[in-house]
View 1 (spheres, one colour):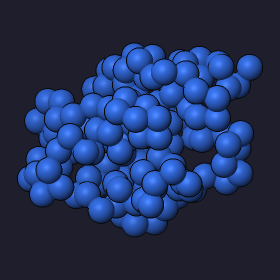
View 2 (tube, rainbow, N blue to C red):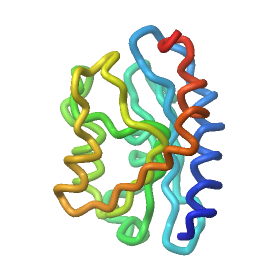
View 3 (cartoon, rainbow, N blue to C red):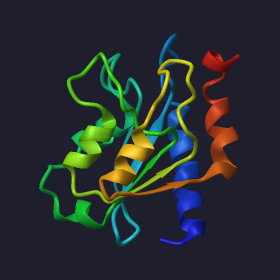
Length: 150
């Protein structure tokens, strides 16, 4: 994937995040999984299927865990994958690590508003996943969350 491809897919993920029903105490996030061939494999957004589902979790749930296309896939998420979670037994960081995905692109780091110290990006990197931050798109991802950020 080129940087231009990364930007295009992240812009699509940000558009997807606009579908999230706004919620107090929860970010609106979009996630898209793209295969090595540049074709979309799955997408998801926060609260897509229930009040507690996260975007990355929703996208990953649409694919079989042993789908061979995941090995070369990139996961685009408008927010850093969660590293703490009360509503589910596994965080999004753990779900990604249980998959064959080894490349994650995010628009912005989780602010300390809801979680004091999110370490999703660091945990992924420490486990061998390539994590890229598209800081140039962070403001667009933040705007979708104006209901939380004020």
